[in-house]
Image 1 (cartoon, rainbow, N blue to C red):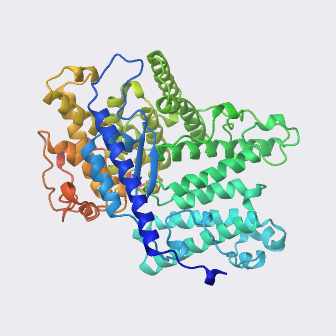
Image 2 (cartoon, helix red, strand yellow):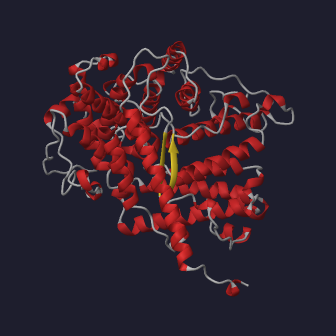
Image 3 (tube, rainbow, N blue to C red):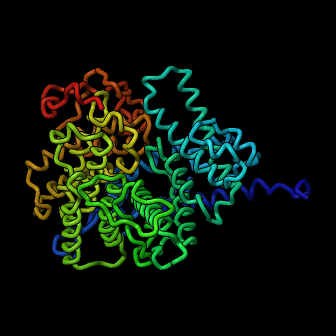
Length: 575
């Protein structure tokens, strides 16, 4: 039958393509006119809510497809600067991916969502497991374990092997190749176990395996991908289907141990949902009104097991258990989610509501356990790098949702960006935990960069119009100069990320654009090198006005003044 179907006439194909292109151009021209009209509106400071650059978010229409981000996303902020919006649109059109016949492993998406062939059986999967003494019980009767238990084991092995990749400076090329092959093998086996176990039905080990698989896909991810959000959607839907959104106390058939483990899993799912949605500028999937699951208790794993009849009370939060950070972040996200909902809501809110939410995030930050509060680098010399990363992350999260102090928050976040970049260098406090600096971190830095770029752009326009409306921002020229200096430091960080991150290249171009018109010029960096420095060839691919940003540049060496500001660096920085 397939052979008898004639090919459509070329004229029909051309007309269809022409009509599609016309629709795209018409939509693009219409959205450009709307954006241009909104950018010229007068800045007002007496509204019920603070004005935002793009209250309706940003909808981008291109040949590659249509994408939307809400008004609180960094891309929507930059979208309010017409020249940058047009430049980025042209850049993405020029670099649109072509249809290829690449093997499945080469796609930068969660491989689980694609037609992954299943040519394995339970026995063949077991043969891929390396023998270990700790698996003695398993090896006595390996056929008795569920296939999804094997998937959980493979995902753990994959994450462990990925962690080995972060120490590639201590391994040979042959060892690196062997590690990469192992990562690919364990990932494929995890996927095959999930598919062979019919993961969409739910059941034991499904959510745990999916969460670890999510971490595998995100381990080296610098720019969040839409496929990851779809994967999170799978996880959320399976969790809802299996009742994780309802607390275990309602169901006597669930043991205290199983109930507490369900609370831990649900807490992680809430964080995945919030983190990925924020990075993509999209609504969260989980609503608080739909769940009553209690937060997990601050307990060590050794405090309870499968035979526990009564779950022990939480340990004091002065005890830093592995669960404490999850609890602290969950509480911040609980308030932050409410703020994000208000920021992206279609209806307006009274300014009193904004002030109330601002106070709530301050209270949540003040209520953080003392062991997880950020008190500066000098007081953290004897702190484990893992705890240090957690402290910085909680500090960034607190400022991220501080809407009533948006500019101050953005400036503080860029201070933390510079610190994180410094301390993830060789011999830095965070060097051993540098793999934890994920796309979620970068998203907050992007938002802060975009806010400050938009402010300088607006400030410049208002000054040229000789108006007084910019006084409503509450910053004088000294603060504006401080913003320029922060953006200059941020520029150096982003330019280093340009080789591996498309979003970093956008930040470089945005900073370059707003600073070109200011008193501070971006002078050519001195030729030099740092342990993590790389050439800026990735940024040099920008066409037009930003093509000259990084051609044949290298990251400058730190000057003595900057080093003196973190003079606490010493031999004991090695973690």
